[in-house]
Length: 130
Image 1: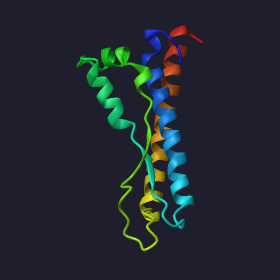
Image 2: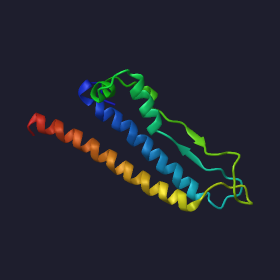
Image 3: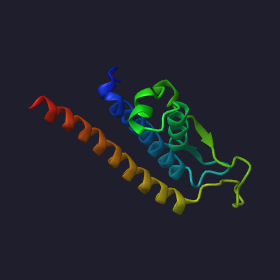
């Protein structure tokens, strides 16, 4: 993490990339445990956390909100999704089709975030004149 207002977007995107990568790993683990009796799917929600933290800054301007977001609060927790629910006899609640869609979606999100980080660094490079 870089401590400068100039890097505010990069710092937030860095947190988003970490969360996205972690969620990909969790989804892959769900897929790996799709046939494990009593396994309950796990997940991680970053988008709602980020939205909450941006609103908590009190700024309506996105630049000011990103600049003032508390990065230490952007650490999402892993949770068990519907721990008491299962439509299967073996009490597992993983739907392999849903997990595959979620994994593809998260991979696209991660690629988009890393593209955003690269573009932010490209802006700095352009500003420096290199």
